[in-house]
Image (cartoon, rainbow, N blue to C red; front, top):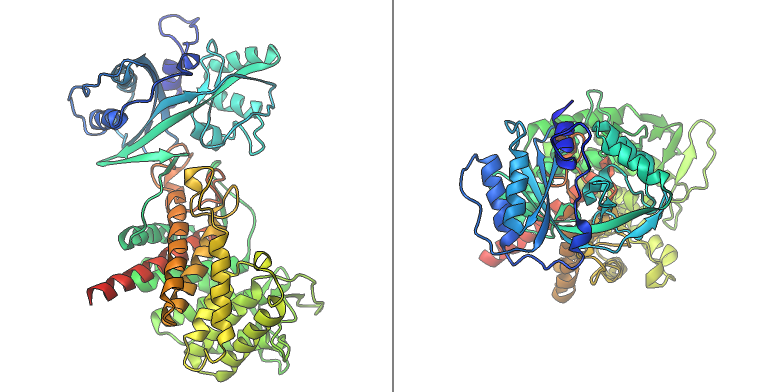
Length: 596
């Protein structure tokens, strides 16, 4: 029996006989518990950290609290899921001493992180079948069965093990699998509960504090709480994201495209647009850090991309296309140009200029005289045009053409980009109400880039549309959310990447507004961008939010799909990384301006 299973048995069952009775947790006694006084839980967490991580022998803090308390103490070593110790006592100090006594029975030689959860609210019981459903908030609510059973799971265990699914249905099979994985006799208690028909369950909530080394962090929904973005923290987050991507590049240059952190599995899927965009973000970070290992990984990814580029028709037959599964996409060519151009900018190596020109030649060959890109996707061998229309491909194409013009100076690329932008603004978006506008971050990148080129900002409709789009994005932001960890995000419930892309676009719009001297608008745009990035920062996987994952180290630095969906896809990391860097550049620029 492993250490985790042994501790699980020690904590959920009385010691002394082979026929042990489940320990009554007593959650039903805490329905009217008084909150702990300010600083008391923090003091207990610091004491447990010192005892368990530093080997201190200091006495517990003197706390006058005598309320019935239930504590969950999770102990981890960064190599596998943490082990949960629980204890109850009359007052925080007594509960903490009992939790410590249980923890001291473990091998603590590799222990380097702990988390302390204090039960602060217990809901009225619900009668459910093995499939529920429950009135339940994933990531905030723990799940406890009747007191006799001794079965209770922290909110993070519920999420990581999918003990309650996204439809708030109890997953009885997953609960049983989890208990049996730990070789726990509590599985028999679960059988008893389900055999009895409708089963009583209670939700409970906790206050949580994580500690490793000298750091202690309050947690909300298992993540660090919202923090103020500053250049130092943004660079740390960007470097952690870049390190995740570096590790995700295989020897052949492909990425681990989608990593399912809950199950430590790789999803069998791929997308070359996102491959190119991810390489772009890695090179963007390399420009800031000079990390040669990161550059080497990005260059392997570029080699993989180059081998997916073939010659294709472009009027004169001198075009090139990125091909994936037999199809060519406008966005694929655009993001390939952006990645290759970023490499040229970062390294000074211009050897890919002819390839970028061929990719751009195909894009302009499918552009009408008015500026519309008439083909978004086609089957290469047959030449059949697919009816797929992407709201983002045109903006990607405009940004790519503008960036290529910056490299080779060919006015044809800028001319095509300006025609394309005017068509999007006047034809695609011209008659749309604000609420119907696509929150097109790639278009904002393009408009900012084009209007910064001498001669490229002659038409004021470009900057006017960028500022309109920025106002629309900011107005859609969650500013007074139902839950505090939704602040600065978009959609309900929010996801990481829609927030990240909007943060990117807002940062581009800020640069444009600032350059035009529109300071009041720039300030509002920056405030929205900052709120968005601060939402994103709390999602990034660190030691505190990987404590229950099967391979904590592998997920570090990654950005998951949402607060409770732990899939890490490379484009999730890409967009968050680019947003971190964009806001950091703005803040550094402001600091430099203030000091000059």
